[in-house]
Length: 250
Image (cartoon, rainbow, N blue to C red):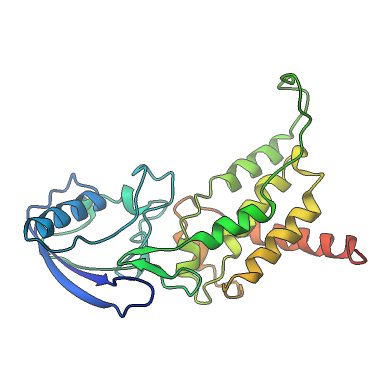
């Protein structure tokens, strides 16, 4: 299978970028999308040309590092699939494929398809912890967790922080990511002592970054590789209102 790739090449955040066209031959349907890019980079290095920079780590859809836009859609548009899980069997011989990095002010381009997603780290650092008694190993069943709460927490914890929600949002909002991180701990009994402070701190951290505002387009939910539901944004907003009223005089 032969493909035409139109890839955004940019040396760094301050440099001007442009699309460069490459021909890739010998692609097999069993390859993953990143393996296809590995093939391209091997060919470029053989010709003493700089390889295309893209992030990756686990290549199992767990770490969230590999995300970029494929034909204008985050992760390529396959529901519940990251770029590293995207198989080349979904493409045809002779296809033209356009690759570009996340388009958001909060995610400056580091090089080519790789962007700086450190704003997500700062949001998590603002409130991503719980208080738990320490000492000897506690009995696992000492704190009972209702089934609905456990399932909600598990669903929220599935977020891998890839940034697709920001890239797909017309406003480049980070509400779905922040809501998932807030809901994860706010749903558990162990997360209640800091519930209000966590919500206020994480939302404030998100606001301090240069993300846009949520206007409920729903594009974030549509491209999320872990299918994080948009209802978590409503949960976070309710927690935010409660926390704001409860700590209004602080």
